[in-house]
Image 1 (cartoon, rainbow, N blue to C red):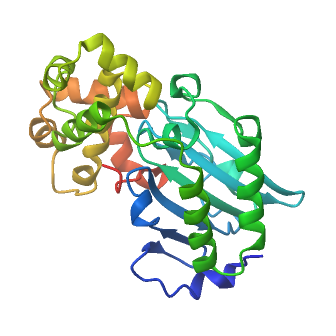
Image 2: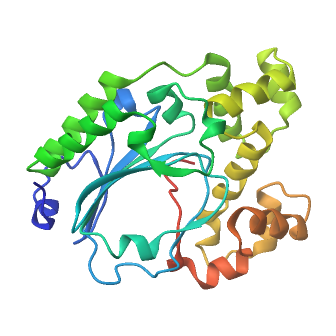
Length: 277
């Protein structure tokens, strides 16, 4: 069984994205990189994060293997389009192993219509009992970070249901490459689909509409600039292609629940996975 001391013994430096005394974030196997953003292992200490610690939505799903005094449980958070607080939950746990998916990654693993799971939080056993059991056993038997990462790779590669839909993959590349500044009409024209067909694919594989996903990407792309205090919000609005500053503030608040200024004043209260976008 893993302990906090194991976090300091990982020698796979090519995998490590971030490491602290209580936390390590790792890249998956390259063959999984289209589907999975990262693995993380956390050993929460008292008040490791504020109770109102909030995850900014990115249209992606997350699997969390959580250990408390009663044992292990596995929770699935479906593709997110709304911010959600989870600091108070994490502070009560002894260990959390998290698998963060890329857009449409959970569909590739399960084959389940992602629109049914969007913004849902439920026991993973209810979704895929066989994989849930295997995942629990994998975490239980690991004695090192490297062993856990390797075994997660093997397990997930073995259970991958399908490759990305080719037209979806092309559309995702266009959205990410344009920082969300591309119309649904242009995306549909580029892949020779109707807008209705494209939206159907996005809702099935990603969990939200094409337009909603583009909006999430656009907002998530602003965070790197917002972290630089010398860059004004009006400049960010212009660089990111918003019609005007009020449009930027309105869209930002609709996704994050706060204005860009409020986010800047309280950045430590938010979690953003900038490696995805």
